[in-house]
Length: 299
Picture 1 (cartoon, one colour):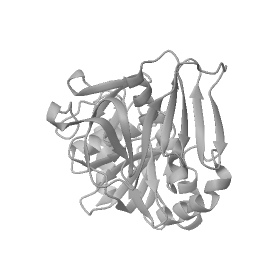
Picture 2 (cartoon, one colour):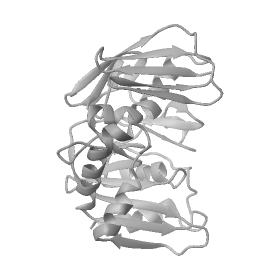
Picture 3 (cartoon, one colour):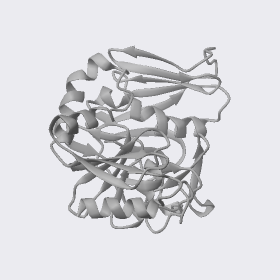
Picture 4 (cartoon, helix red, strand yellow):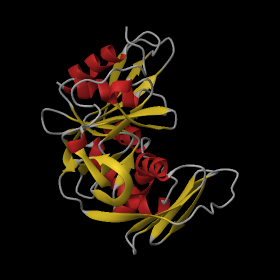
C-alpha cells in the first residue's frame, strides 16, 4: 500500500529541461506574470491579462500574524517576516516588499499561495481543490479540507489518463469555464528527481506540456478522510449538490462583497454537473485505491 504524501511522479510531472524553462514569466489562470526572478516552466495558450512583478525594498511592516487589505483596484496580503504583496489592477502590477526571503522564494510563494486568493479580482471564482482534465475534455475538481489528500490524489490521477490542470484552486469564469493554473504542483514526499522548488514544507514539481486554455466543467469530487470509515462514494443531487459545491469556495470571506454574485453563479454552474463525496480512511486506503474509485465514478 502506498502511503499518502509519498507519491512518485511519472511521465507528466518532472523536472523540466532547460529548453522547457521560460525566463522571468509564468502563466496561470489566464494571468501572465512577467519580470519574475529566476526561470519558470512554460505554458501554451494566450493570457487574458498580465501583471508585472517588481520588488520595492525590504522595509516589511511589522505584524504578529498575516494581514490583508482590500481595495477597489486591488489587494494587499502579507506574512510576518516573509513578504508583502500588493496587487494593483490599474497599474497592472504586483509589488513585493521582502522580509527574510530571497526574491525567487517570494515569487514562488506568490504564485502558489497569493495568486489563487486574487482570482476574484479577475472575475474568476476559486474553489479549494486540484483540477484534472478527463479524456472527455472536461475539468474534474478534486476538493476537500486541508490535508484531505487533494494534491496526492491529483498527482496519481495525472499519472493515469488525466491531464493536470491546477493545484489548490479551480478557477471558474462567468461563462462556466475552468481556467488552468500555473504548471506547478506542490505536495509532501515527492521524489527529488522531480523537484522544481520547495514551498511551505512541500516539494514543488513542474508540469510539462501545460496548456492554459479554458475547459468546460465536468464535475466535482470532495475528499473526506475519516478514521475508521469504509471506502464509499455518495452522489449529491439538487440542493445538496449546490451546498456541497459552495462549501468548497476558497477563502469565501475574502472580497466577499465583490464576489458574492459570481460565487453563487459559479457554484450553480458546477452543481449542474456530477458532484460526489468520497469517504475513506487514509491509514487503510491507498491513493491508488481512492483513484480507482474516482476512475470508476468518472466512467
